Length: 462
Image (cartoon, rainbow, N blue to C red; front, side, top):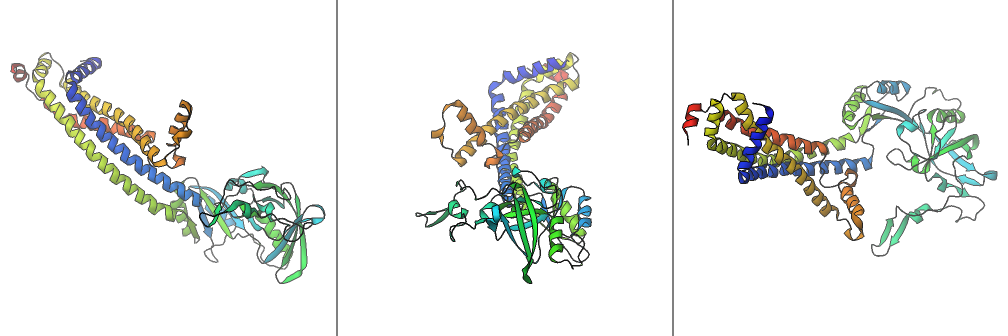
């Protein structure tokens, strides 16, 4: 029997008992929807968890600290970390130790800065670290530095009267709410321009040791760019200056020329992995080298395990519904065999192969699973959409026209908007394939039973 003939017979038999076929398919649809909907809620919970953690810090970043004399944070340590599988970028970070400083810029040093958070990154690592430029370029030459997004607001205009010679940006960003009784943060606040745009400016840096305030050391620095504020990277991206570590070492040597410390060391090293899943392995390898570490993995992993347990629980509840549907398919196929015993006998008498008879009944069961799986996946998307609309409560009054409606429906399903339910394509595909497998598994016993029916006994039956 040809494949086309088997498919034709299969579809004819399904249409012959439409009511029974529809009810059996509905059972598969309910089971498929239960699994997809339950798992989609679990995926939505995990997505919301990871997004909230990402706001707290980079999930692929490991902070490394010295573990003692045999675990120094130097270039050799960086090379060791770079050789660990799963490592993407290794970045050394330093700071000025026991040194005070004052900065000035403009004509006749009109603008002065008494404080800025100064850090240093290992050469050529700023861009790899993910610092985002608002304007300008990354430093390439010695004593070229980056300024934080709001560093310019730390400038004091010496030609203005005391008390009004600085711009208090916080007074613009926080406003008093009389109903709440306290100040609230306004992220959309419009700040006035700073007295001086630092990008492209050459600043004078006067350094001194805390042991000798009177002796000053002068160094010119050039601001090549301004970076976007990102506390997950470093506080200096807000109100600081970012040097190359070699420059900080030179400044340290300038103030303390007799220091015997000639080796370039770092206060801290960042190890960035290629993927979230690599963090645990890389962190363990770093710790084996004798270093202390910290990462978001210590928070993420317990939360991820809890989310996975919930997904398994939700999936198990959905699987019960699909198991009930499988019993329905088995019952339908057994009844179909009982009604078609004579037909089976005729097929055997005409010389039809047993494998073709088995394949015909398995195909019927598989088609029931396929139809139910596809319908279940589509309905699951609709259920997920309704859940997200109810949870996010978009303003329907602001929506005009089909285009805006479509954009709103798409937006409530986007992972970046932290929807309650997320149905990825792989989940829909898995549900369809699983439904087919359930159908084939449920039809195996009835199909095997059909094969073992005696041809003579079947033909005699009315």
